[in-house]
Length: 36
Image (cartoon, rainbow, N blue to C red; front, side, top):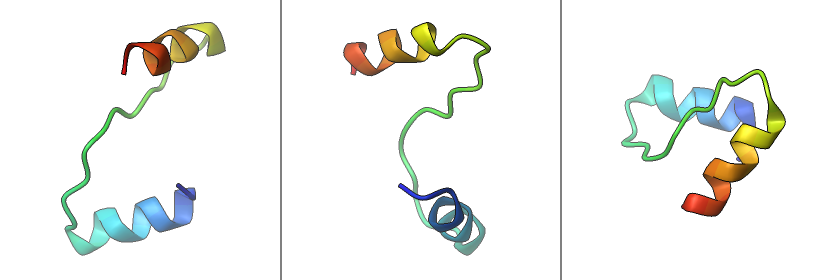
């Protein structure tokens, strides 16, 4: 999903499900993608 699209939908109040990952290591984010 494009960031601009995400921001627009968030501002519009759409229901968005998921995880916003702000981690310093890409490997940790990759593990989270494997978990689901």
